[in-house]
Image (cartoon, rainbow, N blue to C red; front, side, top):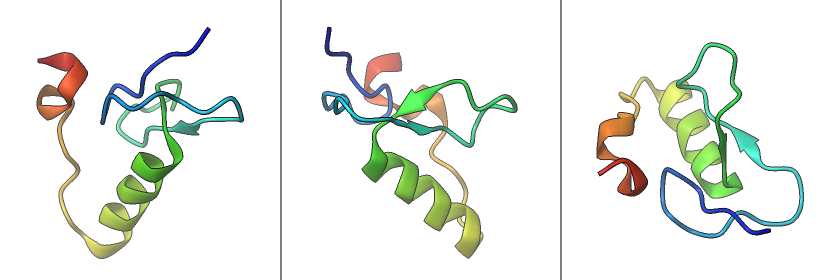
Length: 58
């Protein structure tokens, strides 16, 4: 059963998903492009996109 990335609403791939850096236990799964974006934002000092601004949380 396909699920959607809570961050961008794209369908998660069949392979292993990324884990969001916005949770301490990193149990929230997101797609790889969103995982990459979170990592780049973290490395460059940019603020993360808060979950309240994610499409599936609206």
